[in-house]
Image (cartoon, rainbow over all chains, first blue to last red; front, side):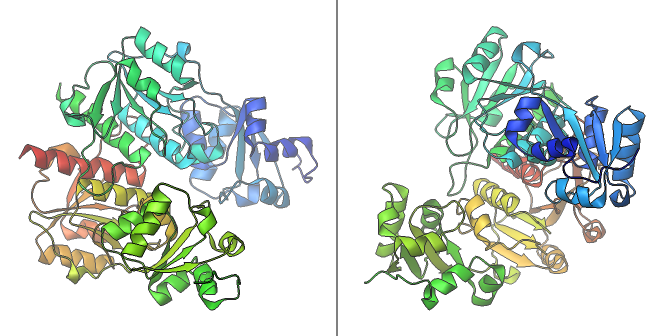
Length: 266
Length: 266
């Protein structure tokens, strides 16, 4: 197939537009620009529709492997020239590949939780870098689902995909309002574990081996008051220094790996 | 004192230049633009030389408190006009304050470690956001020192100060080459705990109550080979999913809080 040479090509125009949240939301598509992220997506059966390839820029190793896997999985290959690639590539990515894939967060009622449930709920997350790091932790700790309550940043943002190293695709990620999440946890008998600086209970002293949701709030404002009213278990992460809080992704990792530690001991 | 109205004022020129690493390194000065960061710095006796104040933009609450504390601590106040403030303010900061303070990382041989030592060593860190999150974890877990081995990002970078919420100033932060750090740990009898995916030992199964340094490597490349040769204890953080690594700041939090957990149980 001939490489696309023109930035006026409608498909190239859409590829550029997919840098914007509005276009992603409208189309239900997103871009996967990194080779590793693309490999992870396909491992988890998220198979892009199209892969745009700048042949001269595809290096050996992961990029070449990602391309070969994509072709083997039936992804449509569309070549583009270097001039076009320069205009469409995302941020610092320079692996010669831009894949376009449909992806949307799931609805809560489509999630099936293993027993005992272990869910991460993140409310109001703002920073793609934090959300990406949280998704890596979620993948590593084997969550049943990641639930985004009223997120201020879009899960399909390519910066989230990148910071997650592709683990956005390897696990169930749902999105809902805080009210919906509260109801969903309640109906399923999952206990919300929230962090509060003034809580009496250290996070290592609470039993996390039953059905639990680790619930964390936004970077600056923390959890909304709705959570306190839901009868959660409030725990504290001990803070020995001057600061009264951790980075959001760091706090998620501390709590998530405490779940793992306790369940290993059972 | 009259507000400075001109961007040509040499002090304003320097304030702008302090956004650049070169100027910070040359002068040994950095900028503290956030009210919370400024409060933390002064709590830890890092007292700026000068505070530039755009009176009309200083909101009540933390910014006003930071300013009052600075004046009480003898910081020289220099007013600036809103037009000047617009040009000198950093990123999204809009609290009407820019403080200039001397700050440099410490030399290894000036550090005094409590017994048993608990040190965080981060080699080759690249991202200011990660380093800032690591400093918050270090503060919260009560490290004896944070040691930056051959960092690729500057500790005095205002983005580090911001992401650290000012905890850059609340604890000893040193910088050295990896070789120097290895020698320093060796002389002091501090065991390096490094993470390796293939290690046999789970991080929760190693005794972290003795003198230990938790050692983590750069975001993409991990630790250099020099660490393997130093006779460290290699541990693994169990990864249940597709990914073989955590975000650097998340991994630091998991290991740092395991040190805290074990030491609480002693």
